[in-house]
Structure formats: structure tokens, C-alpha cells
Image (cartoon, rainbow, N blue to C red; front, top):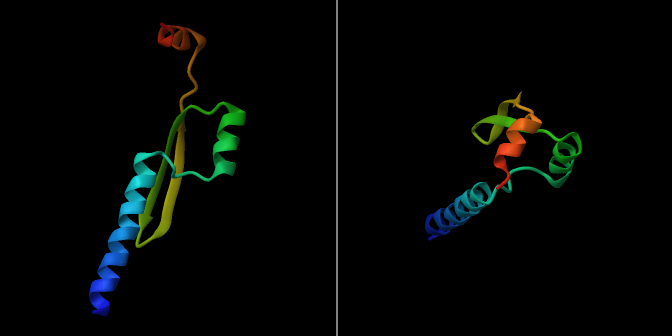
Length: 73
């Protein structure tokens, strides 16, 4: 009985994890605010093993005004 409850709880936690990833809710509000303030455009990466962050990094890719102009309709 306890094993069934533990599996159901683990399944619910995993579903919440998937939902947050799919809805881009993986950053704290303070980190999002910093990214917005500096106008960061690029790639953030996080490597996780057994629930702990092993490594994180970023690749800057500030867009030029010419590239931004192409995105406008």
C-alpha cells in the first residue's frame, strides 16, 4: 500500500516537473528579472545529476538591430 502511494506521489512530482519545463517556468523570478535588465539573449544550460546541479553555463548571443528588424512584420 505504501509503495503504491509513493509511486503516485513520485508520478505527481514528475508531472509538475514536466509542466514547469514545458511552460518555461524553470527560472526564479529574480533570475528572470536580471536577464531582462541586462537584455540577455542567448542560451542557458544546466546539467543535473541525481537532483543536484553539476554544472551551469551560458552562451551569449546578443542580437543586432539588423537581425531584430527582420523579425518585425
